[in-house]
Amino acid sequence: MHARQRPDALAIDISGSSLTYGDLHTRIACLHGALVALPKRTRPAPALPLEGRLYAFAAGNHPSASVLLTAAMSTPHAVALLDPQWPEDLHHQMLVKLPPDALFCLASQTGLITAAERLNIPVIRVDTPDLAHFLNAAPEPLPWGDPADIFLVGFTSGTTSRPKAFARARHSWRASLDASRVAFALTDQSHTFAPGPLAHGITLYALAETLDLGAAFHGITRFDLGGAHRAMTNVRRIVSVPTLLDALTRGTPQDQIVEITTAGAKLPPALLDRARSTFPRARVHEYYGASELGFVSLNTHGRTSSSAPPDSVGHPFPHVSLSLRKDGEEVPQGTPGTIFVRGDLAIDGYLWGGRNSGFRREGPWATVGDIGRLNYDGSLSILGREGGMVITSGYNVYPQEIETALADVPGIQDAVVLGHTHPTRGQEVIAIFDGTTPLDEIRARLALSLPRYKLPRQFYRIESWPQTSSGKIARQTLLDWIDKKDDRLVRLSA
Image: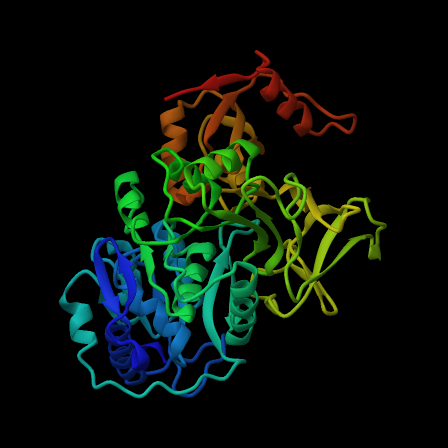
């Protein structure tokens, strides 16, 4: 519709590489024609329509994302969004587990390319003439998509080194778009800058949200403050996790910004104050949600007040009902319990790896295992996670996975990984171990098996572990020692 009515209007700009709505539509039509011509692989899931193909995209914020990600939203095809930060062997595992009909990646991702070629998966290097050649197909008319069709296979961290895959049907994001348009007060003038990685849900959704409005989406290939400030001059809205929002507030006031959307970690009061100072005309919409659940709650901060207590994550999002439960029974208001959500925004389940995970369903209700409290004004406060899952800069990280990787490092006798409160990341991953292995070697070995966002930010060496009465390591005592800078923990620095 936007291509027909306003073909010359800017649709997407990524670090200066831009496409109008007319150009975007034409390229998607050519991509659709090229994908339909590919042989279709047999796989157990996800089920796609006859003309639909599953293609993997691993090129991060390369400008080709403009076409390749938008195509999945507007054609019968689906995209498996691989995180470019994953180690090579994890990429290989994903290709084996979920073989796509084509892989779009960078020429520098040689390990991924080799793995795909061994599996006879066609590879299109998006930063070479490969892509132009692939798009040199006859454009095909874009058919209407069935609301039940899958358009996105996403991945979320789990208790093992293999991420859990989930499938998103079109109707769930259609419902989300209808709800967020009203909740965030969006219009066709809500030109948006999202500085984060497109492999991250908040940025990818911002792309869909902006194009649905007919506004212009601005991104950057890699975060740098100069590029971010240049992009901000052309927009009225920012969508960002608190870590990047914190960086954006380190500059002169930006009067053109009128809306900010943030998620992935609780917004610290000091950062909210800086955001109000740097963006004096902006309302700040702070939402709580999860890749599996979609939106859960919303707190909107004005210049001097908030729609809910600032230390809460707000009231339930439109179309969403909440139930806090313990041992299968709903708990009274004000009592901690596991947060269950009912609405039309959650996934049905994982394609694999869902056993013993945080996400589960009980009839129409779903949860990711967050522990919270429903306050007497109807707002929601988050208290923690079942099983100790850590959320750092919007990523789900399970300590057990990192502890397992540390146990494989020669010279480490035992290790504990904790999430410690951080002003902008929500939580920071901290590793404590006993052993003599040099820190540089530990980091190098962890980098071989873990993506960058799971690598501990701080390391401590310990000689004697505090224990509970049952003989287990006393994790809360360790957190207390960190807060008190107890000398029984020796902080290491490279």
